[in-house]
Length: 445
Ligand code: PLP
Image 1 (cartoon, rainbow, N blue to C red):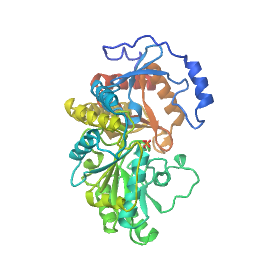
Image 2 (cartoon, rainbow, N blue to C red):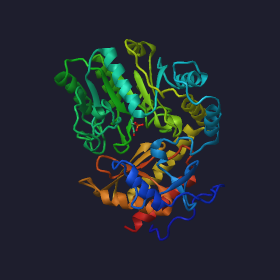
Image 3 (tube, rainbow, N blue to C red):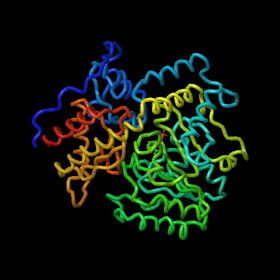
Image 4 (tube, rainbow, N blue to C red):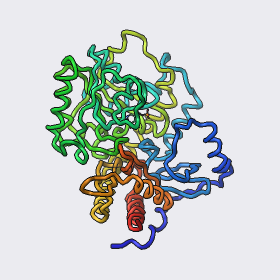
């Protein structure tokens, strides 16, 4: 059926922000140009001046409401400015903003305990960081120290951060600079849509063995992988790949690192951690993004035995374990439980995926719909057989969706995949609005 009119109003929401009296968009743009690094880019032709956020919505300087289906890049899991999280932050800020982990403070240990309770096996010892990059840097260091090897295997198309070690494991040319990345081996990506071997997990896994046999001394430090590649364009791994890869890596003495920076903290809906859907238990888990609901907080969690590897020298992070951040982290875990956000991510995410799949049947431009829960991807291709990336169309649809009041992200190596990673409180009505806006946009192309 042809869509002739844009979707009606966004779902009702009982809040409107006070009139904005700050500097104009143009003033902010001018300052941004002059004072911010030229490396910083924005998503839209006409950038959005975001003034407030409430739950799954953002408001601009004119008081216009937008459905935030990118969620601060898969970060705002409880919703913008969730009252419980705000209260935890404010209360902690009034008492103690910072002291470092050199002193005792229960905001830090209470959060560490709560986080351990969410993890399987003996994964219970945390080291706190301020970002996903820092968490992965540390996980790699721990694996090298523990095993005595310096060989790390990561998947092509992955994103693990932009530090000295993580830029090596990150495997997309667009995120790499020409710097030394010794010891990193990139395995063929088990991507069912674009991968070399389709969805045959067994074939991909042979490449991991080949890397160990022919690219290392036979021993490796670690294998690091996302459970669903986020920046890489919401790429799910071929069935059976991860457990088989873990087996091979462990036989070569390596540790298995689950990068849960995007997939963790209930986002995938079916499980609290992305790795659980693959039936594996990692040796080290790295966490960031959603755990602070937007507050900078990251963590490396491992077993007590592996954690000992880091005690041979001093290792420290000034802000890591900051009590305001860990108080936010504890509040996030409680809100997810109290508001059943994981269940919501599953139910609404499944519904949204179903509706997106129906759009795929309608428009040839949509080559693939994938992901789980509140981590969904829609890949646009101008030729379905050749899978030719439709980059300009992707940008156009994003811009049009913004005009209709919906914010989505994009990613993938070719920049042709929509990333839909809203706050986990996203509703069925929100999902309908998003799909109707997309349908209307595609129908006019
Ligand atoms: N790991 C994954 C899976 C990510 O998606 C990201 C960021 O997008 C990172 C690590 C790096 O996290 P950060 O940007 O907080 O350093």
